[in-house]
Length: 191
Image 1 (cartoon, helix red, strand yellow):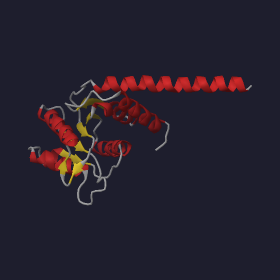
Image 2 (cartoon, helix red, strand yellow):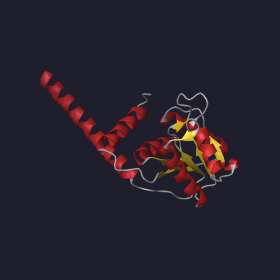
Image 3 (tube, rainbow, N blue to C red):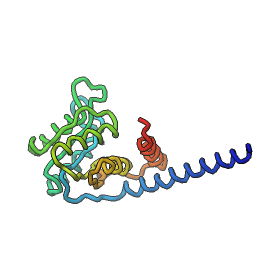
Image 4 (spheres, helix red, strand yellow):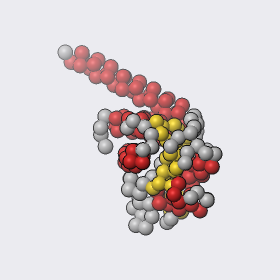
């Protein structure tokens, strides 16, 4: 009986490892694909801000969203991200300010300022989009982050197209594995 239990445990472990490996490959493949097309909203996932200025990663995401907006891919940009411990600024608010400085009209920018994680950002952005009657979005983030964000948005009934920021990519394999694990943790309901 112990032998059967060990074999079963080994098969389950092998199955889980195979699933994570396959999902990691999907994450890596999605990271290289730009699916940008006309949508209702350009959704910019937050990244660090430094005392009211976007970090290089956030700036690259915002610049990519700005390019998509100027190309007429969507009439609205939704910036996300909470304070991350900063008492004065939020990632979403800094994103809005930066985009306005670049000439985007304030009325074309919607801000989510409370989220502290990808799952929270997606949930909040989905609620905002639902209230506004928006059904599709272009997700702008780092490439490795796109698949998880898309799957989360699609689970909420939204159409999501990934568009990784330029300059991202070439991450080590463990970054894709980490994203795969993060998605599985979210999918099974662990937060």
